[in-house]
Image 1 (cartoon, rainbow, N blue to C red):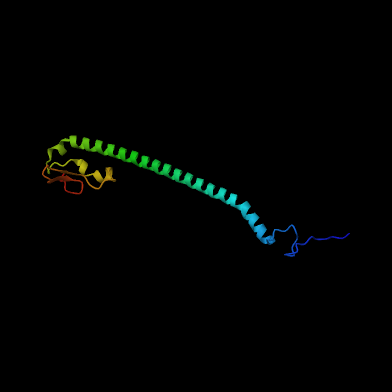
Image 2: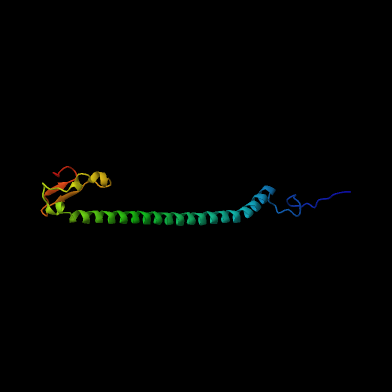
Length: 135
């Protein structure tokens, strides 16, 4: 049995050859297969990024709502405390010799606040939880 090859006379290659080295052909075919996969991967990464941004925005909104609710509650409690305090006779008297006992234990009952004072309308200190009251 004899095998013969049909050679192209001008190049010396097989007659069915494209003229490109096999490495180039394989690399080109590989790129043609990998490009759609790369596009799919990039699309998936972009979608995941959008999902992460949406979850982050949602979490930030939830935290902001929780903080706003806590602040609203604290402001309500403070308003109630100040209303009750303002109704007390010793506070309404604005007399430095009759400071209300609440000034003495204010820091123990309200550690989140720095100070509690009463002043006259012209700004003179009457009583203070910082030690300016004389009970």
